[in-house]
Image 1 (tube, rainbow, N blue to C red):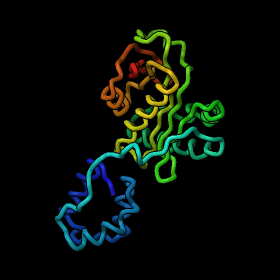
Image 2 (image 1 turned 120 degrees about the horizontal axis):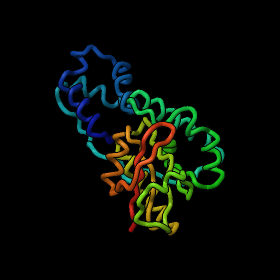
Image 3 (image 1 turned 90 degrees about the vertical axis):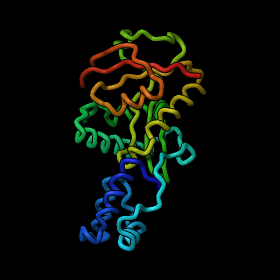
Length: 232
């Protein structure tokens, strides 16, 4: 079991208190772990918490590795699961106060067209959809507001979405890396995108990965940054 730093903090707190002191059953622990996407680990963790309260369990804290993921182009039969992934992500963002997407966009028709055009890429983890992204040459006319370093050879990254069940494990970074590698393989010298100004998680990710702000736009949901990264 590989856990992220945030979950490691809460797990240490749980160890310090001990499930005996909390009066928790294994079902209670399963419910608690489900908040972090680790409900399947309860059967393994529970006996150790009972036997060794106050001791940090021997699980490594770290991020996913690229080899744990499988990236491929989505197929028509993937549409329902892809749409469900976005629906789950929208609910999570709403809870976090990030009104970036809604029932209007991205809608099922848009995702269906992405798949039909061969532009939607799907990341799978243990056989289940974990993230998606779209690469194409489509962009809003307001992209003309950007001061782009690469005016000709580029692709545009759209609709990058990570399933809430695997967030905070480095999957966002790996998905952006995969998009960059695919863009380079297709001959692009730069990757463009727009990032919602009220999504601090996405902004922090893109900034850490070397994307620079080249302009501002305002879409239906509010203000966005235009961002660009030169590849290779």
